[in-house]
Image (cartoon, rainbow, N blue to C red; front, side, top):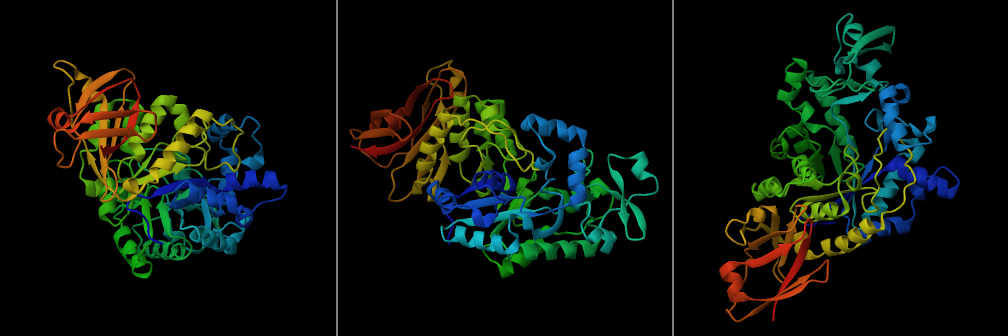
Length: 493
């Protein structure tokens, strides 16, 4: 089951999906009830990975915190106008045990689901949360030294960072899991990576997970880097990622690791062995809506670019259809998913959903489909399956002013895709809200000056014939409205 050079991944909220399926079937649905046609649809869309969010057993105590936390509840009510207690299932990242939740069918059902995906050439990705555990994980009683404990009174003096938990024979003050810039997550407990036994135990957990899937998305993967952990907790941390990744790859050579990572640590995670690291910076620049920093983002080396996971939304970010206007959404998608790297899509993105669904929730609101967005993605995903975009060679193109004094050429982002035996494709986007002009240089084979070059848009009706000699001299002239784009297949007549 070989992956293309640039594969596509689709994130699914497992519990939400099965809740919707349960409503259709009139019974509690498990992974075994997912219809074959749904899996066929994944293949038709050209998806290579399905990331199933929240398959592990969720902490009961953490679920209680989710239901009682007033701030969180306000956000849940913004998603579900008719919120009910049973809709709050607890965070999928507050894990009680790394065993498949029996409510979704348990271990056997996951194994069968993975097999069904594999029969369609699709790989399964699951969660790994290295930084923390749920409040009632068995280790709290059996191995409390695996966690960071606080001092006397910390639960009262620093309640945003510490809590008191019941343990066998009494209670203990323990630290919430957190990142160094925010209060702790009150439904979790922080693992102690200064303890070599903790490091070994978590490596063992990940080794077991690697038997059940083809890859893992590692939650907040940078938090357990030794320097980050030491700055956060004042304890000298042990190394985890390079040794653990190497050990797992010795047994499963094709196992993949994707890092959720921020703070410009993407390259660091790649060097430690991660196949992909979140490209949050591109997302943020697209959201700001200015083309020049977006284009500059692509000046980085290809060895870095091709290991980035490019996305427009995920369970942590707002919905793309809410944050971007319709035309800006399409323009941002062209840039995001026609650049090199992992193409990372999110459940509901293709339908234009606008309400963010917290990983604490197990039910989604009913929303109408945005037909314009669905139409765009239907056409775009078909184009994205072309071999030139999955196996080809990518390059960033240079553009220049259309005339002296016209600075609107900075509004353009242009790519070229080439593959032996395939037509070259020119991707160009005016990433601004106004008309802009430029000349863009297009790589052409050694054609005579009288050769006609045809530009046929794969996502629209545009078709232009231009003289090869003029293109070689000045480039292709573009005059495009705001947020417009072309995906030109280049041929010669």
